[in-house]
Image 1 (cartoon, rainbow, N blue to C red):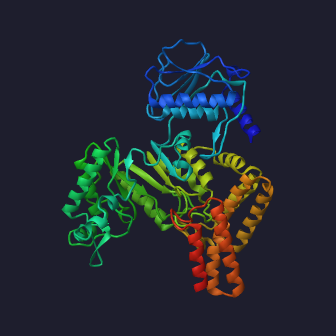
Image 2 (image 1 turned 60 degrees about the horizontal axis):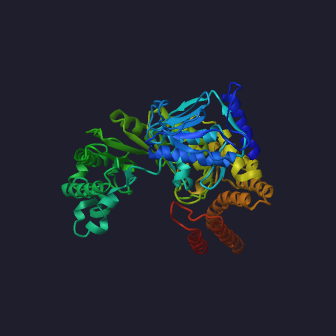
Image 3 (image 1 turned 120 degrees about the vertical axis):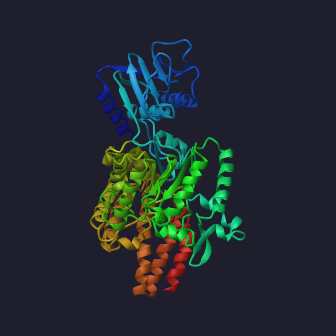
Length: 578
């Protein structure tokens, strides 16, 4: 791996070079200093310190950081908006890296562009890598040179870009990959009415605040036509804003239950328009009018997917559009399942009403997070689709603070694509596999390609959504024969790294997905043919799976739910009751 990264750095240097070089260090010594503005911003200070830290790790030499008014040198690395070398960058997160004679200029947009430029320089010109929050590569080079004709400037594809896997939550990882933090500058990502109007506080005394469902008031949903609900929520929101005045975006969105109120105020509005949105959007618009200096975000999700027939969102209303329950084995742009078609149609209608649209996409299996779910081949198509629609904000929901099937690869790949949708995906995957799985990487690439091929081939027969059980794929990419083929590949992968415990455990963690699929399919098979031998074999597989999952750091098997021990107990109960 070290040789590969050094070779990669050499190729980049050659690409950018006209044959002349700037030596940042020779024989472990440097004539350079890092210069920052006299009144450097916090981001500029962090950027210069990060650059200093990594250059010391690479070269073994300490390069001082000084203010622009200190004694200057001919050879300098200028970080940020330094006098005499100030540059204009279009985007607040845009990056700029260039050389001017013996000077290296690293600058960028006013938010985090300078820090992103430092990390881009370290990665693209010096060969550094950050694969996960814990796994990185820093080359060693006491004679460090760069081309003297560097002139690189880039802007991000999206204003807001974030994914939600375990590594993405780490701020160092997010900064390195030029991602926003999880819903930064926002309060409550979604479903905020569950917090603003908690049933445990209001339902007993004020059941009329909540939806009338099947003739009874139900705290699972809100009655948006009740004027007292607006007063209560506005008061709570005002209190929250007073406590956090710098937050830009505030969610006012319905709880995560697919119900609508059928009271005599709500039902006529729903029936005469596009359903639930006809009471939700007036409520949200009124809230936006009450807080004109804030952005009020609401969901186009499930029962609120379609836009209103009677009014448009206010200018300071953000529509958080969710591509939910779609066929994840096909790109969203071309998927032919009814839900994907309906989502595309609904989004197009929203775009006729507003440009303030935030995309909430799903990048993993939500209910079966350790199940084989080969949707990574759609990542690039989907992100390019969003960009083609001029979407400015994209969130890719993963499995959060837990390990899941290929969660590390998914996190790395999405981070790269959200910044650069034109990325060479195959090369990016190969590089990650080589670094993270070592000699087993070739076998894992073979597995990824094979399962993706079978998933695409069967994708029209049965839509596989972000909630699908492995049972949905047992006639396609999780057939008995395919599972046998996959296991043979993993046998070879484990043999390739049997002498390296770190690589071996990473390979075993990915193999857990096959075991999970076999267990879920095996439970179904027991319904048709149950005997002592088959029952005992499945129980042994469940026990082994649970033990290995815990050993390999898998905390849950659904999004924040079902620990390996809970899964074992639940599955034993199901097996014994069949």
